[in-house]
Each structure stands twice: as structure tokens, then as C-alpha cells.
Image (cartoon, rainbow, N blue to C red; front, side, top):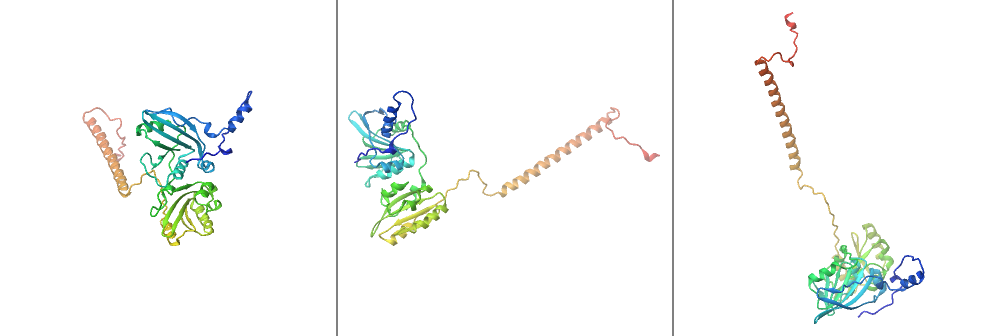
Length: 347
């Protein structure tokens, strides 16, 4: 169940100054309105054969967490087509990372993967799935995939940036399904791993973290993997994590993996040892696997070109000499290009 909270100052939408009579009243009303009321509807009047019924705008249940994830608006609507019907809830976030983080936070622990989208889970309340910077929950009869694709193409403010690779870094062995949580700031850190101080996580450096729970013989432990912009930053913060009471940590490249107060120290070490980091470098220029054949071909081309030049010069010389001899034998007079000789030997 979602519980309603009154939107705070963070949820208000700034407006430009207006001129004319009544401008102050309009400005006051807009400042007091929740952010969700100052936007175009998310759901269209019709999806395929399903027609939209009454819809309502609702507020976020945990406004501080939602704001940290980049919450913009939320809407609920009912659709029906004959005896078929479904209810739909949409959360519009600032970017796809925020939608992914909210998906992990909302996903029921007992849900199973669904093929609706890349990030989708089937639970008792229907299917929960992320698409771009949107998170949806559909309960009832889902429209066909082709009609959903048409629905996606008309979403207002759709953003589909790539998801962070960090979400795939949690070791799979022993990971409790659906326990993953994405951390982007102090609020989400306090909600899901309160044993780590925000000052140590150093979100001002641009860090984010992927968190997951692991089952051991002595109880559950929580692994958080923090990603920093550079290995130097990760090295500095690793020293700070070492100072957290009860924390065991490991640095790998730009990552710092940490477990606070594990019930089983040996199990914690085994989980930390599985953390891997891979750097992917893209090189756009193709490099020949063996440069020697290329050099040999270049030398061969040079010799071929030189041979062609020599052959051309030889043919031109023979032709020029032949023409002069033929001209002399035909008695066409003195050759104007003949060499002048002085015959000094007869003197």
C-alpha cells in the first residue's frame, strides 16, 4: 500500500515572474501546487482498445527518497475494454537511473522476472516495470506488446540513457533475489544501509552504490559496492571506510566494496573476494593484426611503380630515336634538332 504524504518545498515548481493584474495570486497558487499537478497527463485517453477512465494524481509515499531519485510526477488511471480492464500507476523520474533505483526499491521480495521490459518483475499486484525514466505498475489485463510500444512512443519527456554498469557488479553467489537497492545519496543510504556514514560515502565526489543482501549460515549480511570517478578517489575513501566500526572492505579499481558488522566474518571475506571490476576501452581505429604484410606490400608497390616509370622512359626514348632515323632516311631535309658539330679534327 502507498501512503500519501504532503509534498514539501522540494516538490514545488518554480515559475517565472508574471506581469499584469492578479499576477501575485497566480504566482502564489502555482507555488503552493504540488509538482504532480503542474504537468501534462502521463496516460493517454486510449491504449489500443482500452479506454481511460477517471485518473488521479497522487503524491510520493517517501518524498525524501523519491526526490533523491529524481521524482517528477505520479499518476494512476483505470482502463477498460468490454469485460477486460486494468489499473495503471506511473512514476515519472528525471532519468533512467532514477527509474531503475525506484524499481529496485518497489520490487516485491517474492516477485519473479518478467519479459515485459529489461527491468520487469511479476508479483501478486501485477507487473512492475521500468521503461526509460518511467516506472509503471499494471494490474489486470495487459495490452498487447504492439499497443504498449505505441504507448511508450508518446510518453512525455521520455529519457532513455544507458543504465549504470554498477548495477551488475554484485556477486551472484549467495545473493538474495530482489534484495538489490541502488544508492545515490544520503537518504537512500540511510534507508538501506544505515551503518555507513554519508560523509564516508562522499556523495559530493559523484559516488553511487549498488547494495544487496546475502544469506549466510549465521545470518544476513549487506554488501554495498561504491563507485568513484577515479581510482585515486576510491583509494582515499577506502581508507575512510576502514575507520567505520565493524566494517570490512576491499578496493578494486574505482570500486570500494564494504560490509558493516557481518554476522559471519569468513562469509564476508568470501563475498568481498568475488567483487570484480572490468575496464572497457573502445578504440575506434582498426589496427592490423600483423603489420608486416602491409609493409611488404608498400615496398612491392614502390618497385612496381619504379618499373613502370623506367619502361615508359625506355619506350619514349626508342620512339623518339626511331622517328629521327626515319625522318633522315626519307630525305626530309636537315633535321632542325640535329646536333651542331665543328669538325675540328680535320683542321
